[in-house]
Image (cartoon, rainbow, N blue to C red; front, side, top):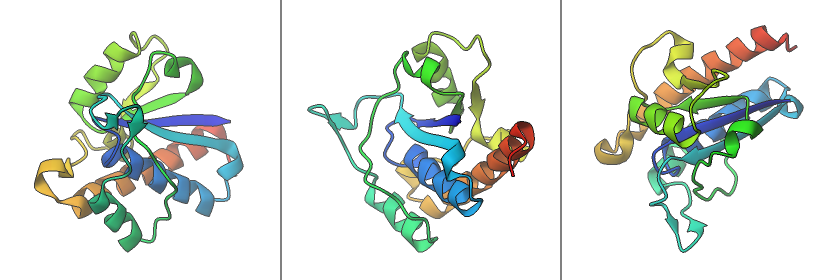
Length: 159
């Protein structure tokens, strides 16, 4: 079983989009039984009274527009205990990577990676929170998740 955790700031836009995209790509590849895919945020600001906010409406719209099914999702915060539960932690931007390293107590096993690095890119996933460019973020995430899945198929000898 390959366990992947996608991480962004609040867990209502980019990381749940990545979670849902990756689940769909894995489903299409016939590998759903080989993966556990989740997402979390480094901040707790989207967790109101212990109940996390759902996927942001604009993120939901871009997922629907692109034929990506999504399930009920509520924002959760990354915890130090997650390090033992997941094989990979995939961050959307440099700030996420920095916070993940701190929150997880370091990365002695090399589990933390930027998403777009799998696609050979050295930039951050576009952040649509202030720009409302959810199509741009979707394209970045789709590219990164597609490359990540191909990497894992090759590395793990899947299919």
